Image (cartoon, rainbow, N blue to C red):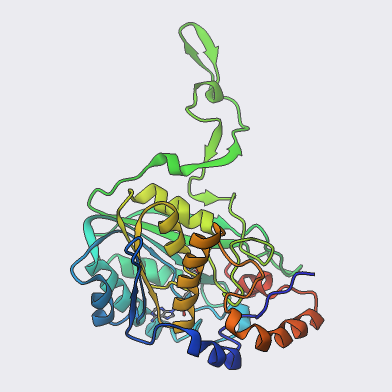
Length: 345
Ligand SMILES: C[S@@+](CC[C@H](N)C(=O)[O-])C[C@H]1O[C@@H](n2cnc3c(N)ncnc32)[C@H](O)[C@@H]1O
């Protein structure tokens, strides 16, 4: 039986305390990668001076942001995934968005992942969309929905299997349509047309045999413990495929990408895989450390995550007991259940 060495790090207060001495960065510090020039910090997205300290005078052509959604994940309110009053959350969103806009180049793309609480008037998604109207330089381009393939839910309600992503552009950034193609073959035929006297249908005329992702992504698996890219303790990890798609579509090799909410370091890894430079940070030193370790592990082994291995081998003996406890718990997989319980409609 596969068992993760530890559960959601936002719940494991005692474990977090034991991991902190092994985190190379403290609040305010930045790690500079000597190989690809990435930067990882322990910083606060809402503080202008923190953002400035990592970007200095540089600007990014792509920003991928995945803030806490103001929806209690796993029906629990923690420091890391908090649920505030909506006005307080919106004030906080305004601060980090303005910090983000300050580090965007003239031609740039911005993707923001957000949730909507169906038990609370779908906040904060519509409020965030309205707020973005205050920044006329940002043009709304697409409203992407990603299906969480492993979702399961209550039998009395619709299953919660969606993740929302807002896509905005500023100026005239690139968009590489090649990044849009999925592995799903085209199955719909039709649209007959005469070409050189021959009746042809759309699949024959198309440039690819596969469908494009469009703005409903159905080909991305939700991260869980059986996947190589999994990181134990990370409760909000975005699938690598989704972030790679964004990186490939909206940046070129050598470009600088910004991510203010690093967590498991998915953007950092996608940037490394596609020869982009990533400046990222998290307010929590444990996640900044995990992001760096994930990058180092990838360089050493070619693996995209730790799956069920312990990313902190220094505390392996101490957490062995925890893993045994988890094995004895119910069969329910915490990581699978969490996003559903969050009631992201
Ligand atoms: C939804 S997760 C990001 C997931 C990430 N995209 C991934 O794929 O792993 C949100 C992260 O934001 C961090 N965070 C919360 N408040 C923050 C703040 N003010 N500044 C920077 N990071 C913050 C949390 O610690 C958490 O790790």
